[in-house]
Length: 322
Image 1 (tube, one colour):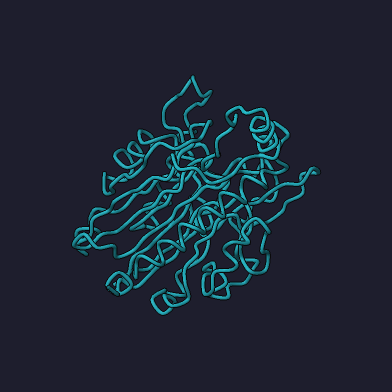
Image 2: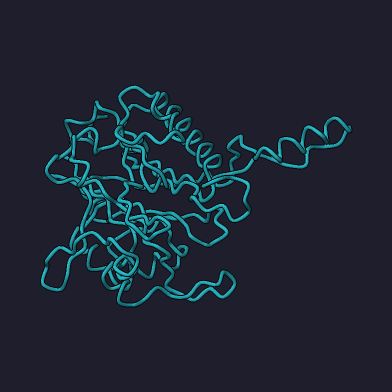
């Protein structure tokens, strides 16, 4: 037996119009394609980002996925209304005697201030005033999913959608400082959970940067110091040309293949993964043929999402190690 996990940024997945956020419904044809991919992959656990709240995720589940999933999503901190959450298949939980429990980190400080905020706090203290700024929190959330068996954690998923590269205020080039802090907080939570629990712990989602060993973006340095913890592509030595989850564009609209989405786990769990059933899904046409990577803005816009789903498949023995 096995189970399948996917991580997928659904790109502005709003299934209702939200005038307050300036959001409109996602194109119905793209929604149907997303549902078709779900039914094709038939995942047991899905971590999803850029979701327009619980209502949108529930509508996807009830209208397109036969209500086969338990929806787990708690409102986070996004000022764009894009949330992160999980769909966990009810049959999967029932067959393994598991219960899914979601814990949010949205309200927890991450010990981070922008330089100008730190400076203003110091000036306030010199004047005998209270600090003007409190620590920031995660841009969205750190969504901590526990799969419980008899109230004991059988697996833990730490799902993230880290700070993007947008810097509209001009205070943090490419969001690097904030993303570094969010990554450090997530690494801290991973280490804390690894000390407290003996079960598998996974870190997954849209990192908005490249964490594999061949890239090693500097904002993820706290993860690089954790022995044995690597992305699934490194554990499995997947060819780098196959490890593309997003096509960026430079100023001249030339394509930049990137792996923004990752799935980290400790090497001691490697024997439980099904190597030939892991990678990045490629969208297909009506006849089942695989579309080539979207190497221009028009082709990318035509896709149901600008991210490609990350897929890993595991032996169910992984959930029975405790």
